Amino acid sequence: MGISIGGIDISEALINAEYRLGVLERIIDRLIPVVPPGTITESDMAEIRKEVLTALQQKYPDAGISEKSA
Image (cartoon, rainbow, N blue to C red; front, side, top):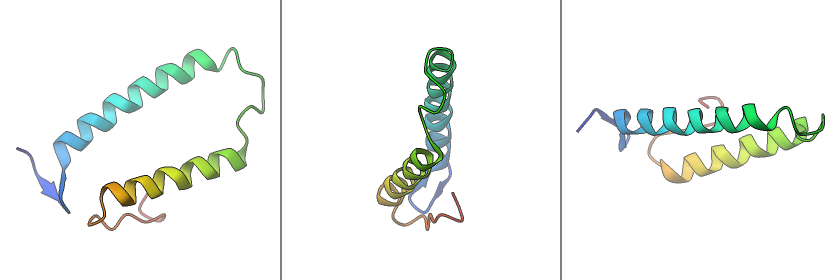
């Protein structure tokens, strides 16, 4: 059992995040050479960030996650 803050097991969350980021980085590395430029726009990125922020707020309601902390 690791350190828990706001109901979040920090060590478990960190390992999970590192794993998921690693997978996503490798997927992106393989996609970049084959997708046309402009496939993902700044508007798309803003929408994705908002969706991820909302998901984190729902998953960790006691953590006080806000746009400024993300």
